[in-house]
Length: 248
Image (cartoon, rainbow, N blue to C red):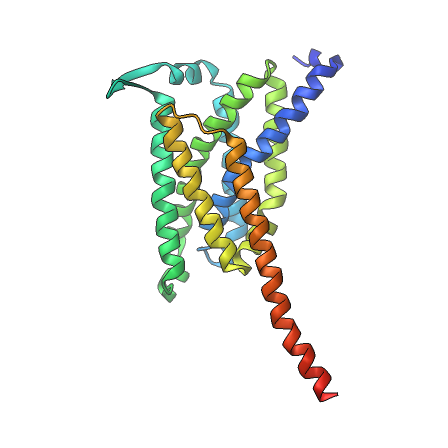
């Protein structure tokens, strides 16, 4: 099972797969961050940990169900001369859910949130966990199919998936705190979710969209927004310094 340890090419494959799994996990982190931000502060850490934990469980469960995954790739029926498989249905359903959820969250961010919504109880917590779990399955399917196509050893896939989830676990809270403290970043993150939703629907109809283009666009937009935040912060600080100098 671990005979690959002595093979240098296997370590290259592990490193590559780990990096890919971390990149693919960005979708999960963004979605979990947005959903968890609606919960009371005392519930966020638990919801975040459970969400990421379910992401690992769903990935490993799908990984050890390779025969079922292969069956999902086979066509189930045709629609307008387009063959639709089980994987396509999962991607289309997940994409539509992401589009609807992101649109709802953008509307909620633009409108004033009532105290009743801000102080949701256990129903909001369990509903959030359910939504995270459903999207975990969608993202995990893409992640596991990528892993299966890249390496041959199941143990390498398991190590890469667990490693990526550990990185997600440590990165999720700082990212969540940063997004919560910058409303424009939250809107940008929701826009990313809409982009990912469109991509999933397109993939479901066999329209391949290179993931590199998507993540490059996301990274570029994020860097531009960071520059905007820094510029606005500098503009706010400058008058304060001028007032202090005048007072002195």
